[in-house]
Length: 437
Image (cartoon, rainbow, N blue to C red; front, side):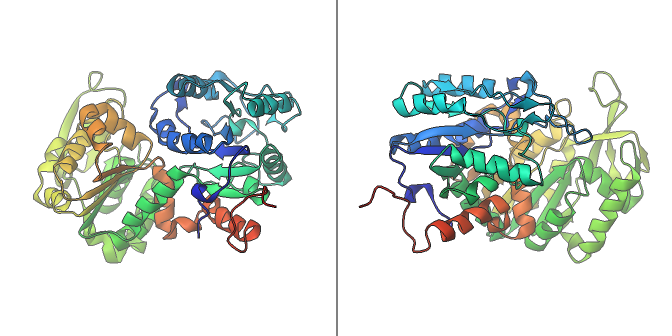
């Protein structure tokens, strides 16, 4: 059973909390949804008398070839801290750590102790650690990860993981939970509960999935096809599917993409009849914008060769089969931006408007670009949907797909380690309370 934040005794304890505030690009916050989603957990911990140390990853500052980590404003947590200070009217400090090399922070030095003292004394309200991916051990697969996990755990009494969107088994999501009592935050609990609506859906169930790399989607798509009544594809993976099925030559779709699409069609052959194809697509001469290149709508059944296919055309969402799949569904899962953002958005807009017309279905949207496009294209509806029970917005679309592939959220290592932690620290089901006589 998942250990929950509500079961913890946090009074006057240091709580180190992993969040998924990966919302900064080039030094600016692109969308506050993931930050706002964790505020209920933050407030709950503060109300219980806990003292919070927050941590998140931001971007990909590590060069995979050289191992060097670029620690610049582009992946700094400072914009997040600034936002939280304005939003919550709290004083938050970032530690000034000194153990720095070309591989990032080599560890956590004792300079942080002064900040922790200030946190205990109420001189500051929270500590926000530097980007976890600025630490050499965060994504390491050797003893550096164990070392960082141990050092992070040494800062606190309790670990709370509220980063459902960060499913990778890194030091700050997994290793830390091996050393101190650990709990799932309120957001993580909510995400898992809504994930079950996909894993055990009410039928008819329609899913819409897009993406840029087919090879990473084969497992999740096969698992989805076994559950859904209808699957609609979009983005580059739809282009690869069209190239594989109809032999259409499309700019930007290489042999690797086609091979992956064919492999998917082979392993999922029993369920391919569930795929509904948006019949009309938008072809353009340019990847940049409609103003810089000619664009036109094509019927895929009449297309043999294309330059760049950059969107599903709006008329696709007038198809009888596609409209029936959306309007007749009881459960709809969307992890899709249909066009190349930000210049090709008509397909996504048509899709989201059609989904909104179905007032009976439970509508579950994946994180990242999916939610950002919803907010940009339909701000009024997004605000309304955020307060409706028939809509739910996951903070991590990739995590949802991974859990669908696994068939359960409990196969994700950050969740799995929380359950193992409970069995280790509370074998008799006792709450963490070291103040008992």
